[in-house]
Length: 410
Image 1 (cartoon, helix red, strand yellow):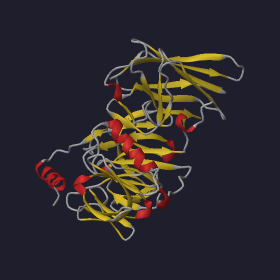
Image 2 (cartoon, helix red, strand yellow; image 1 turned 180 degrees about the horizontal axis):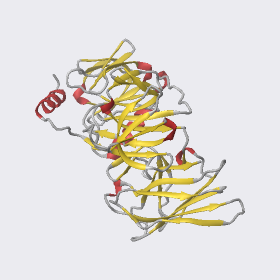
Image 3 (tube, helix red, strand yellow; image 1 turned 90 degrees about the vertical axis):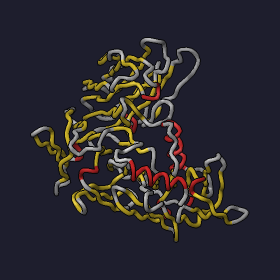
Image 4 (cartoon, one colour; image 1 turned 30 degrees about the vertical axis):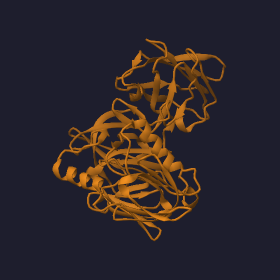
């Protein structure tokens, strides 16, 4: 048994408490987490049921709240597992594997892996983008590696080794912690203790079209799936991914649900009519969709967010609104990548079509290390919307601003 697998097995056997997890604390199904409805209501609740009508039933204290999927903004937040291998499928789903007893396997154009949440999962190899076997501890590096696996720009399979070398060629089999790989020169067998990641040839991948409406669902083991449907069935909840895989799990394993393409319109999905960054000194920053300004995942207050805008002061974003909206809602914060540094002020303006901008909102000073500040701004009658991120305490130092779940509500 390779050394890494042996260490992993010993750790799982000897250590009772979960390790390598960050983000929303979902380890106890009795713990209530944040629930945000489209109508602006915020409360802490537990997911109690997915009923036969497909509605989500939440329990908050001694009260029950039933929401249609279209009326939900977000329940909970994704957990991040940094200690186990991560399988990336072509629909964008991330599957945390449990290699304690059953390692990831590839043979006969199929892949299989064991999951502590879903049991044994099998998929055609053409639906796999790759596997991150050894996750970097640094958030930014880990995000970049996952993105590189998903996007994949080589015309061959790529093996990334722990010493930094890369091999290109064709994956033949992955079995018993050994990868059989054909390079241009010869067939070789690689011990998996040497492998950081395997990226599969994107030309051989079947990328499913993403539907207009889908769900992001996270589980306690750190998996985050892109779903076509979520319904009662199987062991409690049956999930069908956009890529067509059907798995089931218990209700208690679900700690994050976010429907997309429903009632709320996310700013990260809307074209920006105008963007301008005014450098405080000389460094210019772009804005990012569903990423922080550095290009990593949005993290704020110790939680990860899938939707939002990353921007750096001093900057302005202007949107043309193609339909009437009543409110702009978001969480405002400084990304955790600054380690507590940074400070900004946000101003929001609207134009009702007259060409005159009206100030609708000015935030207090928002500083790094603070929990996100919920904002809700009346934008009724607006034809254009402008968001201005300005400096506050110390010039523009580390002003990595996140507009979390920024959305327009009709």
